[in-house]
Length: 280
Ligand code: PAF
Image (cartoon, rainbow, N blue to C red; front, top):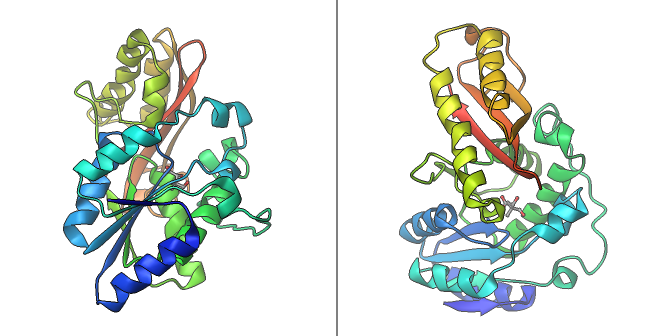
């Protein structure tokens, strides 16, 4: 595996590969890689001739600077994991390399980017679109791989790809879970063992809510009340939404696909965890 830090080096390398007719897969990450990222990398390796994994902790998508400071940084271990996955190129640029000037572009895709994470973290999706659009223009991938754990992020990126008329496939990949059911996340390393055990209740309750066979409002309340009843967990929001537009629904018949998206504060620091469940 080659590790590149400069955009010009990356572009020169990929131009050679493209010239040989090779397909290119991109896996954008912010580092602190875990098995969830490894599953994206392996999938890209199996579907493309060349896989580029970007490792870049993007400051423009953090509206909370302490969240950015707390974010784990593990470049050496990340590169070892990517080698094991058979990745050909790791792209790890500096902030100055990606943003030589402040990025003043704005992206707006309501309601998709305005609800849930968009409402709780103003500017977050604008920052995600800034970096992902830059990565797409550096790499010009045939396919880009994103974890469904960040369900809303994929919906926003799809809107951006349509908006910019980009020719690439967005490949959503299933959530990878720990044995306990906890969705794998770089933030999990910030949890104590006790908090990790508590956090496993999030998915347990989401799964349970599929079997209570109640209306949308009752199902929503069941999830929020069950999780809030566990000391150390506090729901920030739970939204049951149309799986495509992400607009809230009132009845199960309001949309063809229905997803419940949740954000929960865990522990005393607290750590913000997100997850989702598909109802149909
Ligand atoms: O999902 C992430 O890790 C980030 O939002 C992404 C897509 C790598 C952009 O920084």
